[in-house]
Length: 430
Ligand code: OOG
Ligand code: NI
Picture 1: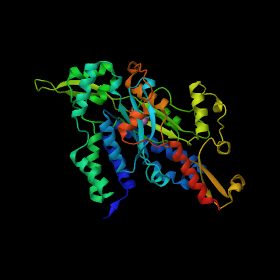
Picture 2 (picture 1 turned 90 degrees about the horizontal axis):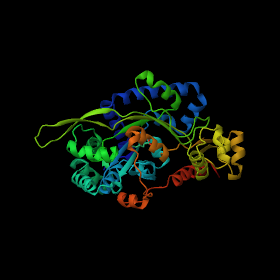
Picture 3 (picture 1 turned 90 degrees about the vertical axis):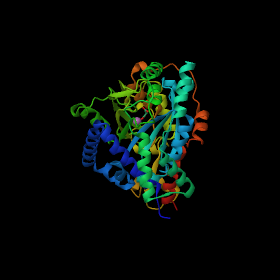
Picture 4 (picture 1 turned 60 degrees about the vertical axis):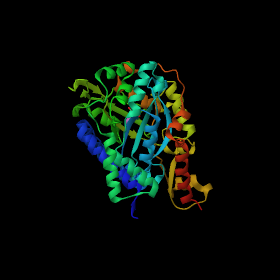
């Protein structure tokens, strides 16, 4: 039948999205160049890092590595995105509740899960579902619901190809190319709103994010984020390239041994849009939604390591040197079971692991964190929605409702990292 791999479709799709967004938001193209140059500089001055990234295969994925973000309006749209991403080998990992941070959404990340797929292309999409139930005004809530229920966010062609892939178990080269082209339409920017200027105004007054999700044909990609090896350097270089970053970097401080995820973004563009009107003459308006972001990824922490990070974050102690108990050297992180590692090298008896590492017979490389951080995500949302967009949502996390909308449970990120570490251990033990 000649199916192409889901890795191949994902890589094509990621590249097509990048090309489209470069045309839509030129500052994104500038940022890509900046990141490429800074990554080359880091690898040139740090041969040990270059060697380690060569060993794990991480170096090959770096140039094409990025994440995007979309916001969907209904459970049916979320379920449809799950099916579309599944064609590209991407599954929903993790649950992020942002209502507590004043943003009326909950989210997951669609991403590849096993090590081979991640090495091939780790493209991820942070996907948020609007929580319409958090809109107080019943009439507006009903209007938004009706608008969302009436729209179709994927083309008939994409829908047919999703069905074909599900039925046949894959797509051949020609069908994969069609699928990528058709699915791209879902995420393209449309400067014409689907609602009147008046309805847009009401939605905007309720929450900027609600206006962004409800007023357009579908979930336009709102940013794409390349991966840098030195986010401080990129943040410092942005103004000289005409890009104004948000004031501070989200996530952990700079360390010798990077952990989790550090991110910074530049402000959303103020864009001209058109509203339909009863007279047939479009009404001009403006909308801010699309922005840029850059991130640095570090080691994935175990539940114990993550608990230390979360406690430091909650206590506002992130900037303290080494924030307490989370050591800043790879061996202590590994021996303390605070972070995940991938092992390679000679075959040894399990009890000899530490000795073999000390002798240089076995190498432990950090497992890269492939997910997101809820507090950082809230900070990224807020910096682009404006601080006035902070709602007061008492509602608790609603993971069960999210999973019901998705049509499946989200995968547990810790179990995935654990499996990557365990599989690598198997390859070196006798
Ligand atoms: C998503 C914001 C979260 C990240 O990198 O944490 C995010 C959005 O604005 O839709 O992309
Ligand atoms: Ni992002």
